[in-house]
Image 1 (tube, rainbow, N blue to C red):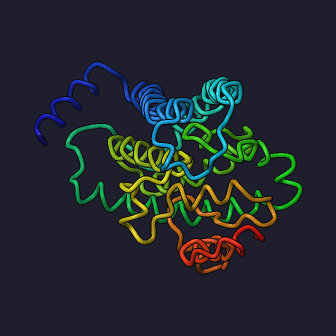
Image 2 (image 1 turned 90 degrees about the vertical axis):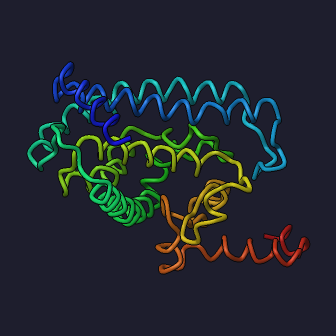
Length: 269
């Protein structure tokens, strides 16, 4: 397996420049993973399949879904791609490389774990700041246009928010200067995680059922359902930051009421 990956990587670095791989290659991988993982949830919602796993009974209109896709394409080309191009010299300066040999899986996994932990910490505080009155009204409210989220809404946001919270995603790699293949793997995992968190479905196979600290769709869906001053659940991937700072109390109370079957109290919330 390692030799196949190494051979494939040798082909890439032989036929494409470092800039092409780091910028255009990263953009292509991001777009492919994002839309291939997010689009199925639109079709699930429209067809009504697996509705028993849907967290909210409300569905988005076709027009709302199409608006999301159109805006995303615009944001990705006009914001994400230029950011990748501008960030390239910074990552090169910090030590990012694309040459052989490839890093060991131990190095890759350690760095990606570090990225997830750091990203979650930075994202939590940035997200809380975006929920202050002025910033929510003028910036973050764009992301909350979809009270019933679906996979693609994970990256539907005001351009200023894309830049602001995007810092949480790139700060880890900027610090460590990873191999490009590590950066690609981190990007793929982060995209899959945020799409899952916004998918609107809680499946029996959802990671949150197996990883105690993982938030997932049920955790983040609660954040979208409530008003900005009462939402909580600000973390991106894990739940411990909200637990430490008490910003998940409403969610935990709701979960307790559901588990106790207290339907009367649930309707009064």
